[in-house]
Length: 253
Image (cartoon, rainbow, N blue to C red; front, side, top):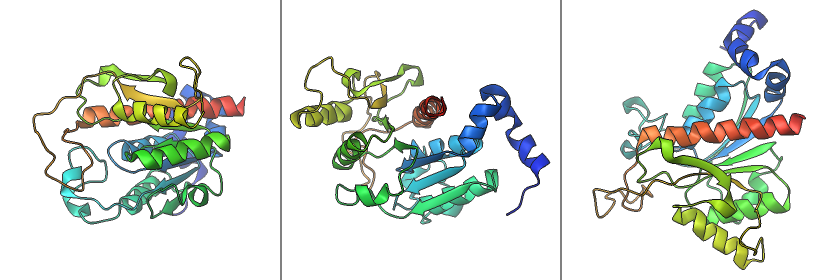
């Protein structure tokens, strides 16, 4: 399906235009969102962006689907084991909206390639990666280049989706990864005052981490001994996309 008649396209996204308004929907159609990390949070975020009519999405990840992903990642099924996550999600986006432009970057973001990967510059970046060095590099690049950024904190070990919160990085709680990033930014002289805002919106949970195991048996799963629940990872994603849409609306205004 490569072509789509206007009336069918309108029917597919009429609900979006009705609830957000025609002006906002038209802005979404012209917007470019980059999602970095197509895992337990990122894959669901991509789905929500595509179903909201975002016109261009860039997917960044070099991972393949593994059996350990099945409990929480949208593309993970028996038929997709061993397949590239970005390829699966790109095709899924096209099936949802044949008019969408999907860019695939089959790579992991690193401090060395962050500038290259974010060129051309998207309208907004959604960070769904779990590597502290990569997240720090992305935060620094987006801050210094004034690129809007939404950051997902850690969802591993969290059980209650009702305890998910949205706040500036300066105010997050119960998230060791975000706390470490906050400390490293301040060590670089950025927002050294405790109450000073970083201008980085974060999705995080105030739930206490839960684990029924001492170690994580899969070396490729960066869960730090924690399990993960799809009701939480997908909720992180939906809240993150809601924040993306808010920021896009602000840019429109």
